[in-house]
Image (cartoon, protein in one colour):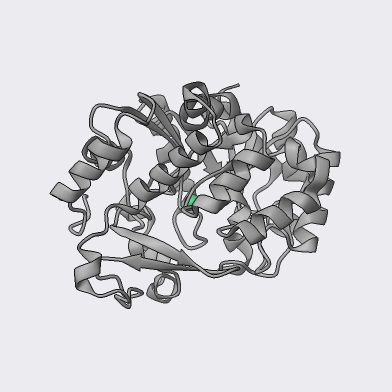
Length: 341
Ligand SMILES: [Zn+2]
């Protein structure tokens, strides 16, 4: 099912052709997307959706829908995705995991992760990870709290025995950090460092640059992590801020940065504005959360959020004096190295 609001305009076409097409590599691997069938989502209560702008934007995308969106957004590119379920507690996660595994098998996605709950037994996870083509696991604070940015610890939704098992099996973790203070929260830093010390062989990608959508949070977190920062991978999903991309390129090894979009959340036209520590979404489409702050005339000038994101990443790479090989790493090869073996 393709969302009705998804539309492609002349303005989008010229933005893509003038600003992105020739600056993007030919092969793209989007390291952070969510796929599902509608039936996996039907038990999610409306109040959960009402409480979350991201879920209101778009929750449903099959692997085939994803290919359609990519063909419209990125004509001429070989665009593939790594995918996992939307980690919502009330979703039919086991069925959704099966669907992800099936899509890896029939090659409609490049890599897939199994969404896990803290109460899953090690036997169950081991059986799933060893009999199905999952590259690793996607734990999520929501499995405990049902709320974004909750004040819970990483080990509450990702217990030590699950970390140990994932490391032993040579699988990866896509980690979405908890807590309102985002990555630099002292307890997040303490737990991340503990994970790095105790599970040195485990490949972990910190999603959304640690939920750091402003350079303030990102730079502070990397400073606090110290040498341990180099032990993690980071994805760009939902990160639009050019200053965060610049900081990531200067503070991290670029080989540990994975391009990701968080689709299907960002299929709309829009931008972001920032204060020192917060962001505000601006969109053209009529979502319940959209207050149409800038007015319809200004909104008519918006292009896709994901185009703005890619433009900012490319500009960051170019302004740092890095070349085409770095683009290929960030947009494709790093994700192959992360998920691949
Ligand atoms: Zn996501």
